[in-house]
Image 1 (cartoon, rainbow, N blue to C red):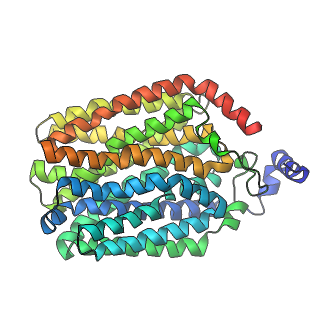
Image 2: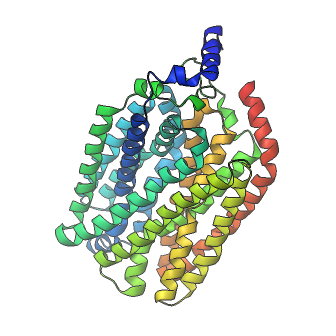
Image 3: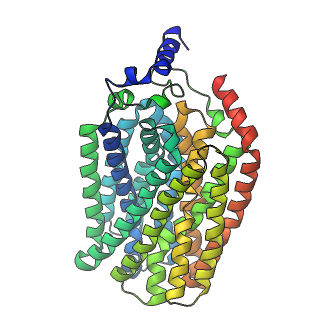
Length: 440
């Protein structure tokens, strides 16, 4: 690092308010969060609207449950495989430019779904949705964390990632209604329009220069990326046992979340004999509970771990354990109020590990490649969770029925608990090693 860079950092440490005051404002970080969060809503609206029209596609194109599951999984699989290289490209090329390009691509691909003539056309369009969304979660989260204080990481991560649930709610809810009223093609067309409008707003109000000017002072010593070309080596992304366990635990827990996202509308339709629009509305309520769980569990984690960071692991263990107990109990019940209450409670905690996991990864990896670190987390979340969950449930449903398949899904949390226990034990030594690597 050059002498000029060290002097600049030292000046910010001595008098951060004097240095930051001319360029930073309270409004711009909030605007960044709103627009980045809005695009995340669009991301998942485009991804999950498909679940609302499963019954209509199944009839119109004579599809099996495995084929329906594959249309969901292709997006998550593409996201998982391309998250790391495209996140790395976002770190190098410019995060705001990457966000604008990705949003435009997935929105246009969603429009392609609206004009698909058969299963193969739909699969191709869904692939391009995944290509557009591949690095958005990681790059978008890195942008949000860049302009806010480091002490809010778990809360921000939970709130930001909850956009996946809220976007899924909107996609499923609006998609089901639009499909019944106007036809399933309009469900995709409306989602595409929303995405393109948000892309235009982002292009108007956010760019990399403004992001650098409004970077939070607490992130400046740890993130000299804008001032110097030096970056941490990529091997530091997987250099400690704890961070590997964080990736594994988060990804495996999202197996449950992915299955609930994709199949709850169909489950309610088949178990409770509901029409597609009513099943979509009911499923949206469960997805909303998952989003609320992400936010509240992240906030609780930040409050409990302010002075004891290792408690992030403990909180994640509690959330995974509660989902392991509540969801199997719920799916084992017959249709009725008790089942819905138990599934709802389990869904609330099912995604509660998201905020703690993001904070763990942020603490255990260098800030200069944070988008790439979150891309690695996205890789685990999608390959182990959001891609595997819907596809495996579809395969099981073709063999034993959807009701029977959903009874098996929650037990993946046993492996989650094992990974989190190992990670918690390794955390003290891993955080020391991460600090040594950052200072090397």
